[in-house]
Length: 474
Image 1 (cartoon, helix red, strand yellow):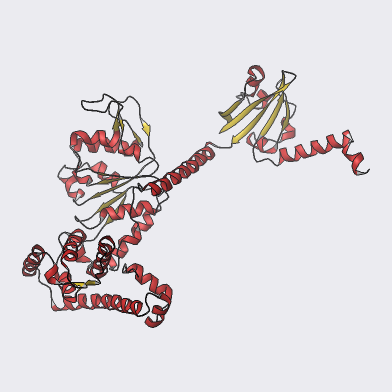
Image 2 (cartoon, one colour):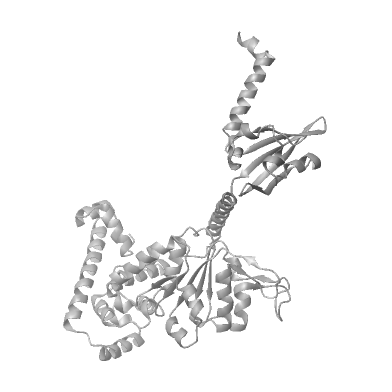
């Protein structure tokens, strides 16, 4: 048979078409079943039959209700309407299906049933993927508009000291989960920086990052701020109502700063939100489902507050699933030099200056000070130092008088042994020596990192790591 005869042979064409259709039907991932106008199964593939714990040949020719008593496919023979995305039960399985009537000359001659999702979990997985794509789109739109919530990541955290390095490593691990995190630490240690970093290192990084300071909002307005409100919910409410911070954080992370200052009455309502994963706006008779990760922070001892009945015990344990403690600056003195250098570099970029750093005399003073205000205090001291600096390094005379007076007072109260001082000096001296050597090498090579690494006797990748570690920019 030549090609022309083959093309015009009806029998061959029909057999080929049927074989092709049968192959497609059997190899289809989706379950498919076809019934005639009397509800008799005429075609069914293996994928569909498996849900009924049988084989296609064992149910072909039987009535659909005999095989699946709860089937709604026979209804299509009467209504003639297409149904897409309907919930159905096949055996013990929940699934999403499509039902389509078959017409011939305006008469219903059968119906097709097709499984779109084999399990509700498949649909939820797809919805989650779509949400992630939408969040990613919002993220990039936010980046273009400069409105992305979380501004920092782990590269912004100086962690030369052992204590801070351990905290950062733990934070990186927990960032990959969805568990609630409680960050504790003294004022000014950088708890918010850690919260930003956890969000930006998580699967929720394309979602919103919403911050709220529980101590900064009057207690009578806190509920409306957190959960939102309906129009006319209270005097002074916006006529159109307002969504709350939790709703705004859906699909992302909410950061509850200063959680220790939250009133007891609000703690009860917050506990319910965390337990039920839903929120009810003020004045509303409905609830909204939530998909929000919670990160809380405080500089207070919540465990002690629980004993004093100032903080709910059940809320404490709900928040304290993963605990992170940010160490104070006085316990991480090895971070002082690179931290000071990073802050000076930031001011250089911001103010278009060229200050190289701080003098050795300033370093010696810094490492002997106990830093009650932690990193925030260091930042403030250096900001004044930058403004009054007349040379290429910040000297003692450039620092604020209040700091120098506090330093003298702290020296009277804090006894540092000779041994402790020598240990601190040795660690700081090594860090300072590395920074100075890197600066000189890069200056002599006019910023050529490959040549600088060769002069320093280290690999170029090691040089890049140290530039990042010490926040040096060339």
